[in-house]
Length: 299
Image (tube, rainbow, N blue to C red; front, side, top):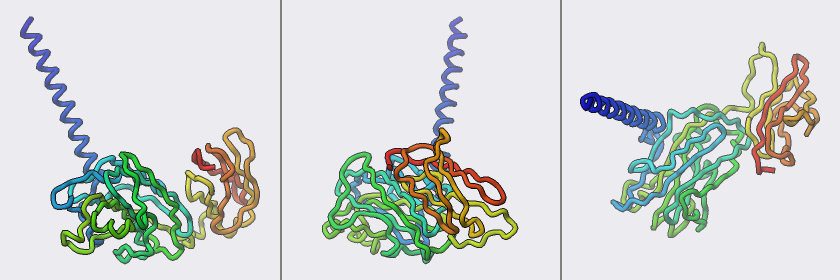
């Protein structure tokens, strides 16, 4: 009997060992899946030196932009730079505004900045900064500090895969002048490399509002953003100019109505409560219905 008990305990030990190993392997796979590259090339260096050996846990918890939603809740390993090159790239359209949401852990006097390389020249220029602190407007301290901005993709932006950079910075020398953060370290010197923080790069895909459509395809109206705050953005082919539409709620009650114009069409839904809505349109070739979610608390 005692031998059977020993064997049973041994089997439990082996089973638990396999579970632990499987969990560790899953964490390792997830780590590789989320962090593709630690090299910024061909873009500039944006690493940190922890003030030559005194680390501080300032980091990016979450980045949300259109369909991108990357939550890490941790500082990437020193020198605290990562390019999440293998995450699915969100698609945004030139001329359309999108909400950028960020969350940080702030341990000291921090600023932040966000840049998008609209002209694809492998450099983040001053006019490509789309969000960030300025002057002496430091982020408040805390483990979950939220910030947001509305980013309008310029009509001059080049189409295709595009680099976006998010950076949180704490640096005693730099912040003696301003929290208007820079996308790069000016040099590799101890003075020019920022002390503490984290830099995350992403790829987004920009499409042109003037993209040539397939002439053999049935024209249809496109919804640019499935989740909205105050504006529903549509792309309406020129041949469907004048198409009547209705916005109905989940109970079938009409909330908005009118006629669509060709091109980029913006419908004001700021007075609607949060919830699920359907845009119904009667086109010459078929009846279309598009589902859209208005976020709560945005009216």
